Picture 1 (tube, rainbow, N blue to C red):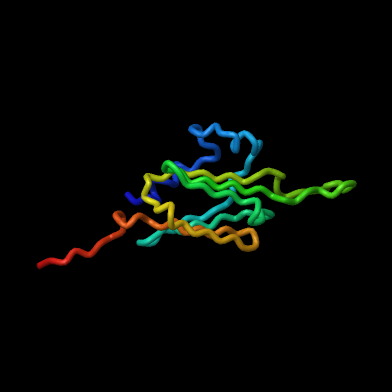
Picture 2: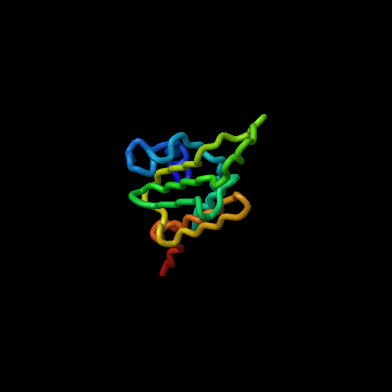
Length: 134
């Protein structure tokens, strides 16, 4: 079974193991829409975070867990009445567990127009190897 099959059921909204200040500061959170694709070298994750700027994005990888927090910077103008709003005014939070198969030192992230693209490289020991026969 691949790591991708292992982590998908483990994706959850708020981890039960982490009751730190960042979780309690967030208040109500939303789980963003995302896609995960696997190649032989890495996992590619695309996360949709409308309204989140680079300054409002926090990514952490530690102890077999990857955590993303996205805060929106938009404030409702004074005297403005909302008639309809398609999305709630809450921070995004996405947490998933992995079996330490991701090389955290080589994670790459790019945020453009509210779309975050992550590359989570696999450890060298997990990549397929070709074995020479003598």
